Length: 179
Image 1: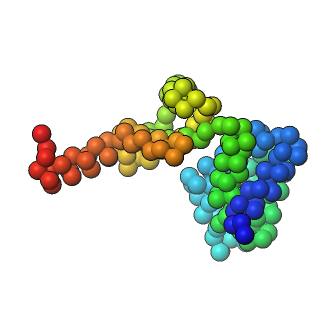
Image 2: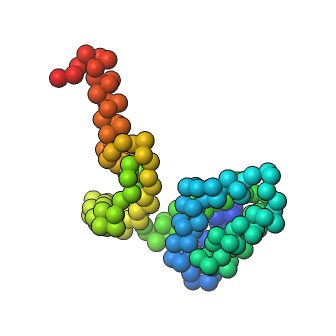
Image 3: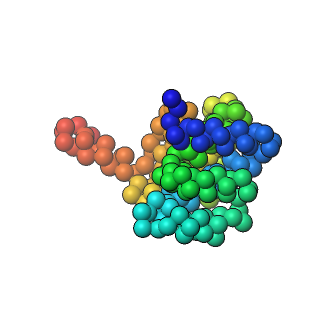
């Protein structure tokens, strides 16, 4: 049996295809997923101390003007069914399904500081040439990286972070191989 998040993702995917709005839903799903992962939004929705009515109001206040009514209804349904913790995994599955349908490759880029629009565009162009397919960049910021970035794309991880370089240097010193 498919996981709960996969069942929700499939339902949203079918709804997007039926309305011929896959690209619109994908962009909005990324917006919602990233907001829920990156801030207090996710904590509010998964809290046992916040009522369903307050969660629905919170979703309406923060997302209603930015997302399609069907996607809003999708979020309301998940709240009603007490599956709030499944929202982010379901949206992630949906995004991956949409990218496969559009023959796009998702590249998850984590950097120490926010990337500029030019950097994202340059990275997208470089990866598209290397892979031979259109690439959608999903940037994230993690200050713990100190500097640099890592890219996870099409099953491969490229780690060019200062944190990785420091870890490698420490390992070399421990083994007495620094040179």
